[in-house]
Length: 374
Image (cartoon, rainbow, N blue to C red; front, top):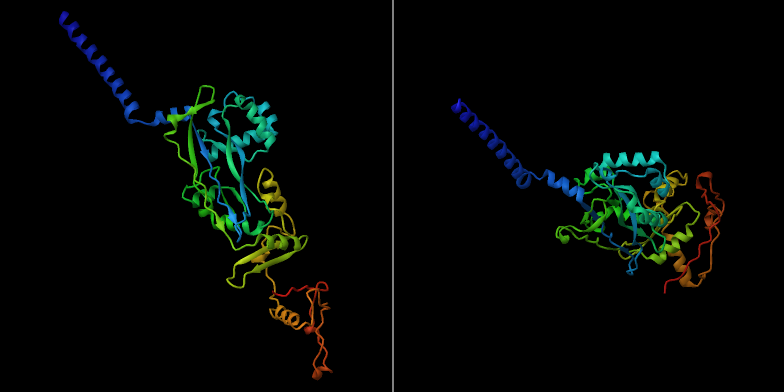
């Protein structure tokens, strides 16, 4: 009997030793090998704040900025952190209903998972931003994100400058996952064509959060942070004064004006009518403005300067006007009234009359002022 008890004691000790060895091995695995729980802990305690770079500036031939950047704010959400939220108060503050709130949360989860921040509402109006900042402590899981957006000091060049917008799934796929949900990219015009030059490089700041989801400081004193790098600028052949004049002349008209530098073919001005303010495609109302213009039967979004089809005009008339000016036959204030007919002027054509196929159609009488070269 004592021998049996002694052998049973060895078995119990062996079981406890094996269990202890398993616990030690698992602790070593969790702390030294497996990074899964470390990443989960970081996601709960560390907030990745994306720093979007300023896009490059586009200048005219004299170095004047045709467009620039200003700072606005996106409201971003991390769905996994939205707990015990007063949905009614939040919807009232943001001016939305609960159905919109739910659909945006679901879209955020689908697009970027529950653990990563996604844009809940882009480019907040200043008054909405101010209201949220005062009440942000009431809404865990939501934060403000700075974003540079375009401004246009001359309010011209909408068709060839293009506009920027948030990337979609196709943009992300084409970029090889370089872009992330919430990034902006050029959608057309120079913004699209020179995206690689203008875009810059995003940065990241890692911030520590407390148990109430409040940011309390930098993670590891910022040793893991990366700096945003601004995009490079573009200098064009455009003359912004001439562009302003061309768009003024095309107001309430349908057509196009393109002025070229005869020495090198550089574009001095390009406008398409109807013209619109490029600021309409930036800021909080850009989606509504775009939808309105897309449905306009006059097609203001169409760049007729490069996509319109027009018969070529006579290149001899400007030469004839310059010769007449040089000979003193006309003055800079002179004009010619076009009635739409070809009239015989040579002596041998006295009995000739234009047939129906020879008639020229003019939309209205034209009076074209000319200015001599100095």
